[in-house]
Image 1: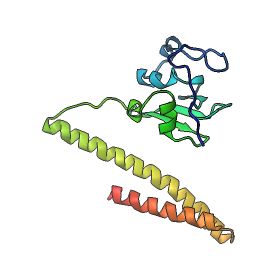
Image 2 (image 1 turned 45 degrees about the horizontal axis):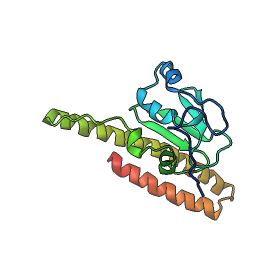
Image 3 (image 1 turned 60 degrees about the horizontal axis):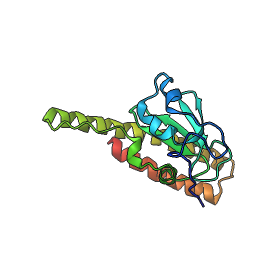
Image 4 (image 1 turned 180 degrees about the horizontal axis):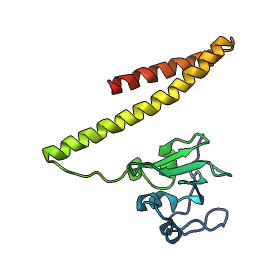
Length: 176
């Protein structure tokens, strides 16, 4: 069960442990950091940059280690994942944000060309997502096939293969 806790986001820059949290001034010095990611990072504790992303304590549960991963997608979306299993809604709610805060503002172009470009961009995003699903679920099916050959496919594994097949079928529909 997840338990929201006070992150002291509005009260100051010190976290529960008394350690200094990363502030706006330090985030602004990171080259290539979109300003939108600051809205989340400044509300988290023990933020550390790793490669193109960050790790931090998850605010949705009593996190002793940094189990929350944050990065910025190619399209500007803020991507966050708690490896302890917290739902993204719980993570954002614990720091006073909503899911919409993770996405860039929409560009409003009501012209026929603008609508056509938006439809094409949405279609390409669906294709990229479907290809990602296909790649991942194909690896699940491949591993399961190897286990079948060795006679070691459990009932739980068979259920996961069934889920993979459903997801592959859904991705195929998007790509057709």
